Image (tube, rainbow, N blue to C red):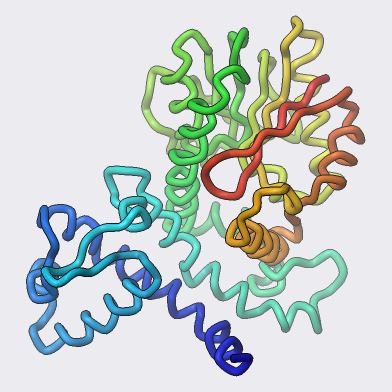
Length: 340
């Protein structure tokens, strides 16, 4: 059994790239369009691939069925809850799959052991592998990779923020204005604004990011740097931002957020969506996913995911009087309400 486990763990990366292949071939979309269980030959012709590769496609599908990405009956392949998530017209989590398996990113993971042995103090895997460039430099200089990053995070936001506004609408009660800091192209802001039409939402991000923001009347866009100044509002929103930064930088960001909501009326707050490593979720898969994200943050940014005590120290260290934590039903993130 132990040998099987070693073999399986060593080969797990193949599952990621098999999933990437399914996304690139839009297998979910083709099965959905077929409207009933789809036989292998019909799937192959719809792609299309040459007939001699039908058997190879069947082998790919066998793995994806085993991983419960798809299901199969006597009539053919059908969608599962998993494969419905990667449909383009739904959450399009396929965009996240493409980003996370992009060679620019996977090469960093491959360089991790070299970094442990030879990386200098204060360096990151990204800097060592890219002539001293930070991960943010790669996104800015490589527009294709930057677009994949924005699309991947937007697909994640559709799920997590959609769940947030349904499960915890009270978090937004009494708020008239909200700034989504590091809000990318505006997906999260649009979801919040659509759910609460009286709430004036603004996206703050770097100029080259907001230049690609959605054209939508439901929110405003401001180009700027969160380390310098955040526009004033009743609430500041941070989705998966703080795990990109070291503790010292997180304190700086949180202090800027506190300045933006003070002095304000009662009810002002900072809303954080991020991973809490040791949150009691009774879900081994979620716990493992948190550890995987932690390694990703280490390689990309020299940053980390945090446990409950680390979040506590960070929040109080930035001068906040208290906070509350809420679980989300989807993904591995929690919601934190921070009070000035």
